Each structure stands twice: as C-alpha cells, then as structure tokens.
Length: 73
Image (tube, rainbow, N blue to C red; front, side, top):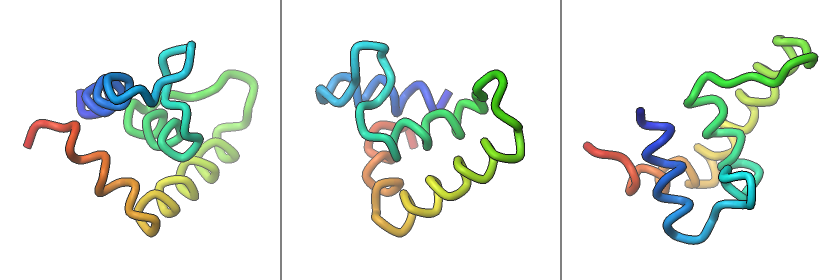
C-alpha cells in the first residue's frame, strides 16, 4: 500500500511519466522495490542488485525521506 501512496503522491505533484510511474529513475526504482515488482526476462539477482543500489542512493541522497510525505503515518 505504501508504494501506491508514493506513486499517487508523486503523480499528483506532476512527477509521473505517461506510463504512470515516476519520471525520476531513482524514485521509479524505489517504487518498484516497494511494490515488490520485477521485470520479466531479467535475472532476479541483477534486479535485486539494481533495486538495492537505488534504495541506497535514495537513502543517501535524501530522496527516501522526501517520499515519506506521501505516506500515511
């Protein structure tokens, strides 16, 4: 549920692309990780590594903290 709150909030702030996902690549990857989504035909280990790296970047850059404004506490 938290992932969709973030996606909805980002979209309301004009940050969604035409496919409905966040425009910002790091935010998009964080959303995919939060929603436990995966891409077909890409090895799971590669996806997990990329999503983990994106989560770390989001944490260090403060993006993760900014996304909490969209979630119900």
